[in-house]
Length: 127
Image (cartoon, rainbow, N blue to C red):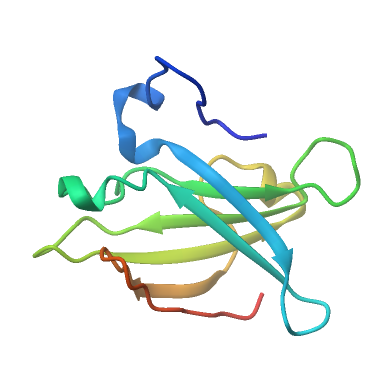
């Protein structure tokens, strides 16, 4: 379940476009048994000089058993912007930890530089 808005005349969560989850893409990776997850958040923010919200937890919940509850959760937490730069740490939680609102579970990637231009880098972690 996404907490995003879609449609004409709707506003971003809490009036802050940095919190607007616009798309989620899921597809199989080239490596067997792996999956690629792509989350798109407010694509206009970089052009408006905005960074990711440092107090928000952006997350992808995955239900593996059909009970409508997260069994795995990936949480993305961004640092406050410093000199036009920002980093992200990604946590992976399983079981009851996956149902917490805060970022939980071990960090699978830490302090990764965020790209704010049209050419992004690729960071990978094992989870």
